[in-house]
Image (tube, rainbow, N blue to C red; front, top):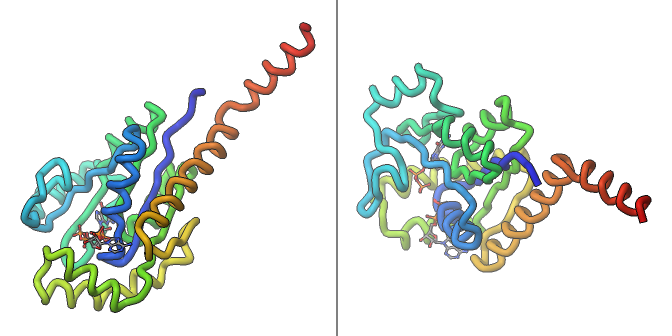
Length: 211
Ligand SMILES: Nc1nc2c(ncn2[C@@H]2O[C@H](COP(=O)(O)OP(=O)(O)O)[C@@H](O)[C@H]2O)c(=O)[nH]1
Ligand SMILES: Nc1ncnc2c1ncn2[C@@H]1O[C@H](COP(=O)(O)OP(=O)(O)O)[C@@H](O)[C@H]1O
């Protein structure tokens, strides 16, 4: 059936588990596309340019924005982040769903864009703030200073939870992954109903009359 790809937005305070969940969803369904953001943040050890992020200088980033190549962009934790527009439009044309790992500002901008009708938004909460801090620490990729900065901003991010279609508490990773799969399956069925089931049912009825 012909359909347009969905834009699946995942937001959460840093460390709640978005990237881990996005990776698991893509292992489950290889047709899902991850929106690789551009950022002015320096790469962490092990991060690959063009795979985790497109790492850019502030000047390069500004040029992309000025050239209208960003579907959305925002400043987060003192760095710029943005979602390139073209790969998203291409995936939509191919009927492939795109996953975005963006903050609340990105969520608001994509929802308000011309593509907003295709958005499914999901907010991921940690079971508690001490557990969030523990996860940031066990990820082992940020300095104490960076962790303190992210914890300080976590309440501001969480305050936007009610803007999202779904809100999941990521306590048990397998359970949250199951909930995400269920959401995606349900939202795809809703999309297919909008996109083309009318024609399918018309055909079905016509066949019945022929018999
Ligand atoms: N608005 C927006 N936010 C983004 C984008 N890419 C990443 N972010 C957000 O920026 C924040 C920091 O991301 P990152 O530096 O990878 O740190 P991490 O979330 O701790 O792994 C997270 O809240 C991301 O969701 C983007 O393209 N646009
Ligand atoms: N449900 C969970 N239980 C325990 N640890 C988790 C859970 N979800 C994620 N983590 C761990 O927490 C850390 C932060 O997760 P990550 O996916 O990097 O978060 P985010 O992308 O939201 O910043 C990682 O070390 C990850 O393995």
